[in-house]
Figure 1: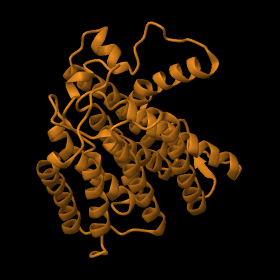
Figure 2 (figure 1 turned 45 degrees about the vertical axis):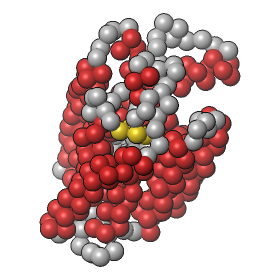
Figure 3 (figure 1 turned 60 degrees about the vertical axis):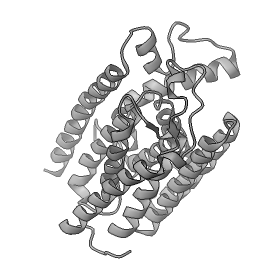
Figure 4 (figure 1 turned 180 degrees about the vertical axis):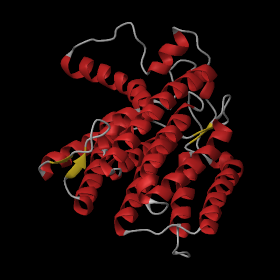
Length: 326
């Protein structure tokens, strides 16, 4: 690390500027070197993505990690998380660059390994106690094995619902910024700028630079390299907030958008149970195909819904926290 005072305003500004400019430049000059999308046979308007640069997640994740190493104060725990995020990004990029998509079972096994690594790291450094929010700040302690399993579930869900939401120009990036920003507002009040909260700020910055090129009609797609890394990062900050259950509210639109499809497919494949027969999944395909929403309408309306939910959730969090303090 070149700097040791992440609370310093000058360093803060330099880090943000570096993250944004570096991401923009890489998107411009590295686009032609990225793999290209083959189109999605079963997605609404999936053929429109054919030929676009894919896997841009490798660019903004590398910038994020580099900016964090230079401008942030990193603990051992945080460094391990960066390594896990890097492995998540690399596995996604290898799938993006592959001529034949990886099997779901291979990706599922990789997700499980990454989730287990995250669970062990978090439990080692933070213990097995968490708070219930927004209803109260009561602390609950559960056995390590049970909490470990719940963390694995959280990470797996976050990776996959984020990945599934990446089917409309600008949607995944916009919803991710809203979620990360909401966690930032919660945690900034009590932690100050530094370590994980500063990383959250940098993540929003690199995503904003990426969205410059991913706005409809996009020229670059983040691919699994981006969406999967974003998902595991959101899971990590949900854990570090000490109120992991609040993830259900702060990412509700992504959970419903991608999660319903995962449940639908799993029940059909393993239990031969059919649900939501008249609903296209992910839900953004239902909105485009059945409700005739444009891509821009999907992004704005989904984002508006999530913003309203998050404003109310964060407000309730602050009110309860202040009442506990006083």
